[in-house]
Structure formats: structure tokens, C-alpha cells
Length: 57
Image (cartoon, rainbow, N blue to C red; front, side, top):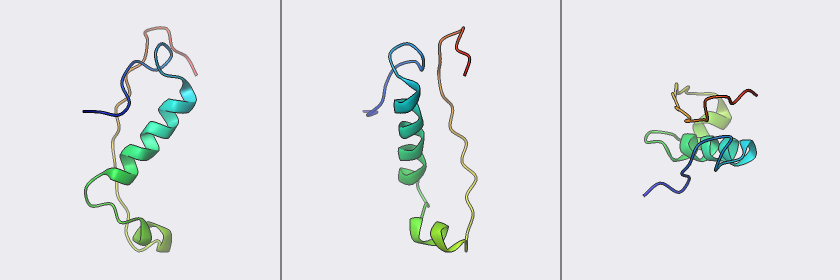
């Protein structure tokens, strides 16, 4: 079950959404934080965020 649920700008604040995106990147399969800190490997990660229709920020 996802830890963070809801739409950005309605049930979820921008700060919580930013933190949730960071957690998703860190917990994604194949991510090795020590390699990221050394700059030896790069990962492209696409994270989709659901927000309310009139959200602008």
C-alpha cells in the first residue's frame, strides 16, 4: 500500500509531495545511493504526480 496518497494541492501539500518524490527515487529498484554520491552512475526516473485541475506552482 502506498505511503502517500491523494492529489497534490488538495489532500497533499507541496512540501509533502516533494518529500514523497524523493522517497520514491531513493526506494526505486536499482538505486544505489553510494554510487549517486560518487557520480559513477546515473539513473533516469520518471515520477508521475496527480494534482488538482487548477494547480499552478
